[in-house]
Length: 193
Image (cartoon, rainbow, N blue to C red):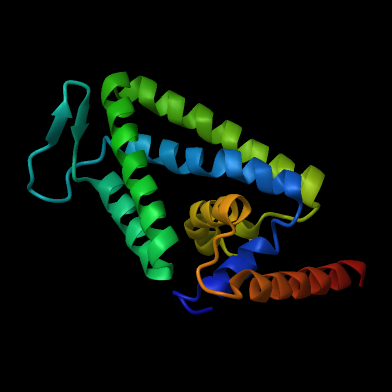
């Protein structure tokens, strides 16, 4: 799978998310996973010899692993699709800013507890979505990196397509749907065998 092949990434992820209830569960819980994953990363040491950036009394930004994580996700999304990728990169940046603010205000001990509780709720909800509604194991069991990296962008593209009919290029959704249908058919045939 080409690293920047949006069609293949989206088809892979979409084949594991065809049930509308499961898709809704992912729409609700995927971005909070990214947000709360950034909370403990606030407490990592700076990766550059730069001073923390104080936006206000309640927000101190540190160019640490949380920032690096955000930067990698943002650049990857923009490389996949300029328009939706730019929006996704902005959302990633906002997640970093607000998770940093929350972590700073909560302090190390409470921030970890909040992040852990949120992660447990979000991940459990998604596994329930796959077990009860999708009836298929999550994509992360077949390709962990691809599933974790693509999940926020996949959800954003789903929302943009549903609300605004957005396509990265003409015919994108038709091509992806054909690939998803073929993958699901192949999976069901293997399941029966």
